[in-house]
Image 1 (cartoon, protein in one colour):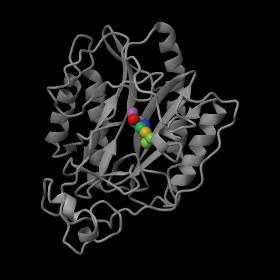
Image 2 (tube, helix red, strand yellow):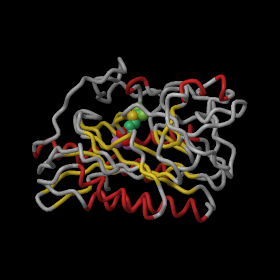
Image 3 (tube, rainbow, N blue to C red):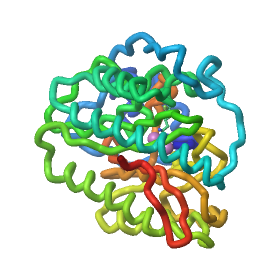
Image 4 (cartoon, protein in one colour):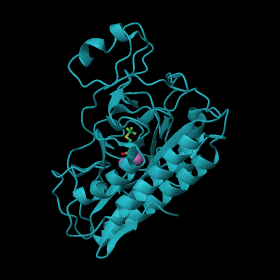
Length: 327
Ligand code: MF3
Ligand code: CO
Ligand code: CO
């Protein structure tokens, strides 16, 4: 996702754990900064908040595998076009196909007792085996090869030592750099038996992506995508995250083009044939507002309720959209 500054919305009691998941008391953590933000009533949660685990050492990528510009420095070059040549589209197709394969393999390994770090290892190995570089690795300093976002984590969760538990939701977000292009996709998986409300959240999140894709048409503004997504989420009483958007993608992981998933009339850029971008709605059980863990990456719902997400990389065609992140 590309990111606007997230801000918290729920207010725990002064001595309760902070909403951000830091484990510190609210008064020691975000209380002061929240005085300047919006507030919402507290919600009683079925589970204790997620806590950060231990993040393992950096994984190696063989020297023979071509790397994106930021791999050594952590700093991606700015820029990148959003309309691609037929030759670029062919290369992007290969990167996207690889990402879809890695997502399928990672998803098949989701089970109670598996650590998110084990999923990172598996996806890393498969990416490298395909001759790809795992795009998240050292992207703006991100320390792992995939993102794993559990329950109230909206996106950009860092794989760590925590084991998945029966009833969890986990999103795996896979981006592969191959043939000079980034292919980006994600899906939310159910860990064992998940309650009805969680199943509905995941189903609606998938439908929101489908509706967003159906709204793609050259000549329409990109705001048509959020206009198709938001009413579907609202109808189910769910929120649409605003602080993270879809993005233009190609030889650059995130171009300047932003695709909001809520209705944002300011998103006036017109879709064009051969444009490539992601749609990746993050749908919340409750409020859409986000907070950020002290690790600077893990985005969580401000009210602690769950979030689910699905993502594809798309190509704008004369008749609509083609999904590139398929095998
Ligand atoms: N794959 C994510 C997206 O959909 C971006 C992850 S960036 C990372 O845009 F650094 F967190 F990996
Ligand atoms: Co993306
Ligand atoms: Co992604």
